Amino acid sequence: MSRRSGKLRRVLSRFFKERQIYHRSDGVVHFISMSSKTQIALSIVIGAALLWVAYSSVNVVFKEQIIVAKERDSRIMETTYSKRLHDAQRAYDDVSSLNQIIQQNFDETMVDISTRHQMLRNMVERKSTIDQGLDALAAGLAEAGDPNGQKPTNGNRVMVDIAPGEPTPRQSRLSVIRKAAESMPQDPAGSESGGTSGGAIDLMEKAETDLFVEQMLLLAAVEEKANAERNHLKLVLTSTGAPVDALLTPAKISNLVLAQGGPFIDAANMSGTSSEFFHHANRTAAAVDELEAMHAVIKYVPLSSPLTVSRRFTSGYGVRRDPINGRHSSHHGIDFAAPWASPVTATAAGVVKLAGNRGGGFGRMVEIDHGNGFITRYAHMSRISVKAGQKVNLHDKVGELGNSGRSTGPHVHYEILFRGKPLNPRRFIEAGRYVFES
Image (tube, rainbow, N blue to C red; front, side):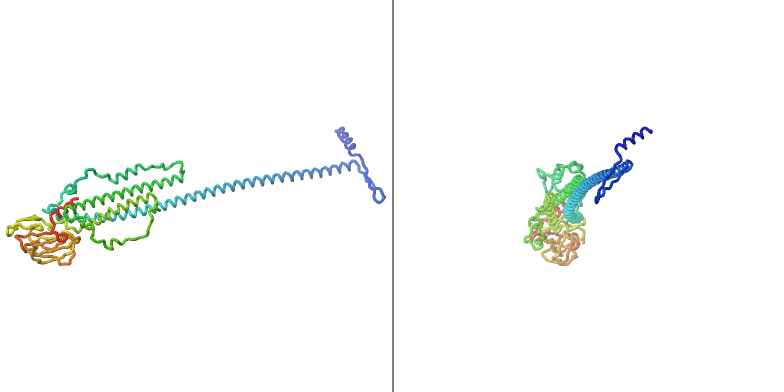
């Protein structure tokens, strides 16, 4: 250890020899003597200062680099966050836009569905009202039965007598629409192209399409039933011998028929399905209108018998041998025999035109104006129950059966006149069978 200490002293004494520093000022020379220890101490201080400066410089440089790195990382994080925020905002905007599109499509679809539903509801209600009127008419006619008083015994409508079947029946619109619906392309609800939102839109469109098909089927059903009932009633009127076209086509169109209006809605602005629906709806509405017009006519046509009680058909329409003088004569009505004072009833709704003794052998007689040119006569009654100008409905009592006037026994003489021309009442009563036998 002592050897190392001596060696260290020799090395230090060689590098740090005693030195004098001379300094001359104002002609006077000064010197400072620096021993080895002083030099060593000074070297230590200077070295420490240099080390401190170096450490400080390095520390400052490293800290600056660290700060720069932190700032760079912060900028990267901020940029990444801003990008993610922008992506999230864009995704939110896309979702919001998609929701608006879905909501707009939903609103438009609901408006279309509501409009179609309202039209269907109105047509079905109108058709139901007409059917109720026809059912009431059929029930009323069934009370009187056929000319001989026979009541319906089954629920089958007798159409073969007045309407021979078509050699080639037309194809039902219902079957056509069903085939069209089955041929429509069905997109899978979970298609990959649409994703979740696309799937929701596809489901909504599929549901709307299914409902559209159901509404079209209902339209077709209403139209077919309306056309079938209209054609049936037209055949009923035809079988009476009355001119059907003259009944359904008024001679002069009144202002009530022309009283129409409303805002103009261009059909070009409608969607394809809506335009197709309204096209079919207009056709169905026209069929219901025609049925309604037919019902308005037929409910005032005398299709019943003037007697609802048990009776016997005693004389027909046309040329016959006169029951009093035995000579051939024209008989413009038909005769029914029944018990004395049996109620004589109106054969359709109308207004009493005459009630009393007219002469000409009719005795006590009632005339009823049913409109559209139809007038009915009820003669030879023992008592009259109505007055001129009185409104009557089907099977309202107008008098009691008797033997007044030119008559050989208790009966009622019944006539139907159309625009002053007599028609065969038996054909009308027979036609009434095709209304109540349904």
